[in-house]
Amino acid sequence: MKKCLELLKTAVHENKASPQNLAYLTDRIAVFEGKPQLYGTQFDWDENGTLSPHYFDDLAQVNQRRSAIGLPPLDEQTAIIRSQASKENQTPPADWHKRKQAIEAWKKTVGWI
Image (tube, rainbow, N blue to C red; front, side):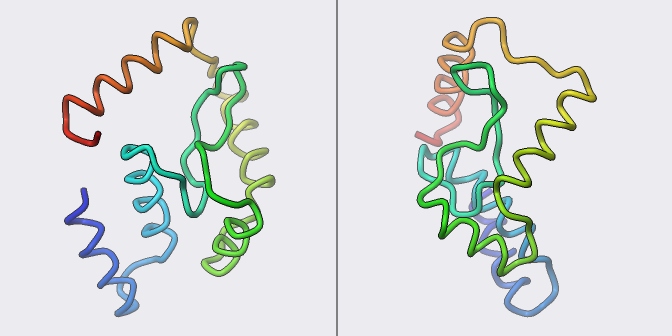
């Protein structure tokens, strides 16, 4: 995935790929590595059973970065994601802590952390 990130960065620089795709991949890798997102593109159920963006650095900076590449502000995107999840009858995991442990174990197994 990290190799793809470098290729995608080059493609975006050469106007051959969308900077939005680069944002999504950048954030996906950050989430897998336990780092804050730069664009707030990755969502999951939180401890309270609410679909929310994974940890990000600074809301004002996130929204500035999002705007620069044509993404809506994070609060608008959050409303869209939650609405879609509701329409698709998605629900939070029955045992959030168990799911979180399984995700962390997977990250270790595949070498993200």
